[in-house]
Image: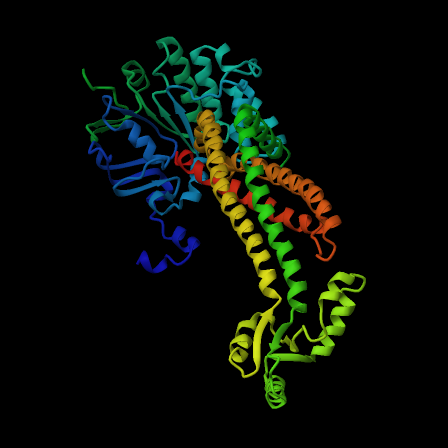
Length: 251
Length: 292
């Protein structure tokens, strides 16, 4: 039946299963093997609902980074289907990928800030390159910098900031476009425990605005103290999915 | 749009300045290659100009044996008149030829003294509908009784045009090689710029910039080199044309020469080729960086 109604985009949208409205991310039997033969993910089934906060845990090489790469369509799965924000990624043409990424915020362990731009410019850059008008940029960037607690550091350059502050800039850039989903790959990996707590409070605050947060992490203390949903990967397989879970692995 | 334009211009400018040496090398290569190509095109135009003029007035002369009988001459004339290739026909008798020679060499008594009234053969001067079909006409009448020789003024001209054609082909061949080198240089420059900005490109891709938004500054940077090169090449062609043609024009009065107008018609072609080539080279060399 699905096949017969696929002649036009609106019709296809109307045939989305009902779970799509609840699940903002869905993986259906997803497997990914890299060209060198390394199995990154195997047979992953997972639903993440709108507004959830999910920790993705597992040892290095367990597939966490691949998981995030698949969600932003940086990589494509060999098998299975992925839906993100109502988009079926296997059906998403490459020129439509930017529209997917505008709906996703990404935060990385290494911050990925541009060293020759100020805090303000780094955040504004994310809006400039998607063609937002100057007036909107002037309005929203100060707002989001205020939100991450850097309202007083607009003109600072990344090298003048501490690691925690740099990660706040990176979060501000990821969130400035008000994405529905925030993907974080080891956001506290380079930070000391105290600073990490501050970053987690910020991510929690963002989550409370209704943004779905998926965070890959190694940080046992953070996972145990937050008591949110925990998804554990081991050698590419999903071995645990626990609401209000703990880190577990290694203990 | 203001922010977008400002971003674009600053990116292009920064890219050009960062690789100043490479940019200069690129522009010089583009200039040389396009100047050669333009020279080839101008030679072509010059040849066409001269060829059209000459060929339109070219006549085939059918020289007659001194011993041709009246009957043979009339039969030849009838045959020529019925020939669909022939547009016009003049019979030049020995006396006519002598008179013409008298006029042609008027004042040059030594030459005139050497020409006896009986010296020049009689001939038919034949104009053709299509001067290109000279060889067909020649083969038709070569064995005709009473025909001594058939000559076409084009034979002389063709020797001149062969030289010009060879020059043009050489210029175009070298130009094509140079253009390949220019494309490689542009591609390399763009790749260096893109590598220097790979972090920035990665972030742009991550936050959802379209491929075209990422690509445009690089493509424009390449096209800038292409267009500047084309303009410099046109300038060189203009100067070359001025000096060379100016001198030739004084010495050779009977040939029409190309002028500024022809250089101006070649300029947009060079700009289009320079810009197009640079755009393609930039576009292709960026593909690897865009697959983030």
